Image 1: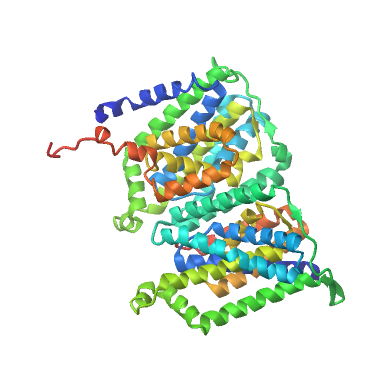
Image 2: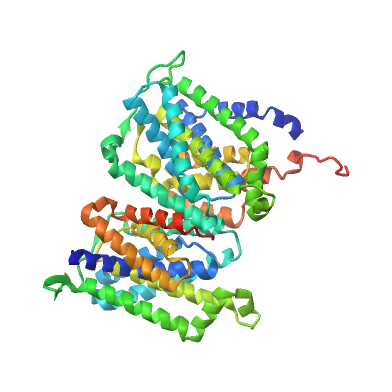
Length: 277
Length: 315
């Protein structure tokens, strides 16, 4: 049972790292960003390339892979997302989905469609409550917690974060102060994308790396964002760990149903809490 | 000129689809027709009511599995099976509608996506004993009445008749007060509420109707192919119908038909020449979103010749 709990926390941590970018992008730019899954997948593939070609250690490779994705994210922001401001949500969904299709096809072109397995980069277990856990999983949980703390401080203390929070509240008022809100939202987009790439990098050794890895996790992330409330930091935090638990507990009894259960929970949440977007 | 043409448009559509026959095999041409019915059902939600669904394959799949299971377990009569499939898809729509139609925009798209994912799971794994899981199952229909639908030529004629029926129904529907109300909901739902209409009921009705027509298309596909697989309910295929609707021009029956035919042509023929098919699809979608939002029919219908001349227009 404790193993399941730790597994749920790990999934929740990964989900949080991935979903927070999605949630912030929606809250700030009112754009449902399917290209988020592309950034996530690319993070994992960059990690594979760096591990294989450069032969660096895991931590260094992970850092480089995460940073290497940022120019791609910036390109997506500059050429697609920025042209969709103020447009109807439908077009944003379609356009970012198109970006995802193009990117996934590019990945298939370069790397092929066969899954690439990665081994546990630390490979050491820790004893906790008399049961041993892979250290790597505990590391992910710790990382998610510290990222949440970091983002919380960022939005509470840093001036950029404060501008973003104010912009979320009332964009026009902030703009009338002479602040370029869109540029600050773009920074948030990059932070979110970087975290998505980090999520891909961290999750890669647990699952395997394949071109469609983004699709499935994206759907779950959407569920996280909808359950937690779009644009809400704490809501996303709580709902990702709650849904991570749902996945772990369902997976314990009936493996194939694990991710579908998330959508059932989401539907139930929506029945009682209709959201207007 | 257009007004006069419009009166005979059902005949014109029939003629246009008959023109496909010299270039295509019967089964392929039937496939085109069925996809057009599916695009029409999608367009009722997207083009007329302004709700982008990212999970319309669910209803296609409900119809496809409905017709197969009915033919397999209850009666191989094709008409009864198709009726059952339509009812099954409508029932799914009626069940999910109250949750889905309360939302708009992104949430609507994502909720449908989630429903579709659940449906895919149910068909692929949970009910694999009944649906055959990954392998799918075949459907055998008996000869009913004077039509032998196993004959590809008869199936073509039957599906064409179904398409014309759907077009006629859609035409009547979109011109009716109900259709106008749907377009009003698309423009400004709050104002429609102000006028005293219970928009929830109308949206729900449109959702169920769209589901039923999509289920109809699914049932006909099984009639045409003879077997059902989880690909009929695959979430990732939703982009196809969205692309088709956009390329033709959303919010118009003719646009849906043009989009359906163009998309099927691209996916059937260009796909063999272009190895990177998904990339092509993605670039096409980007181009449509950023440059040609009106779609093919939208552009054609703005041409001077086709513009209906209004009374009082000084000419």
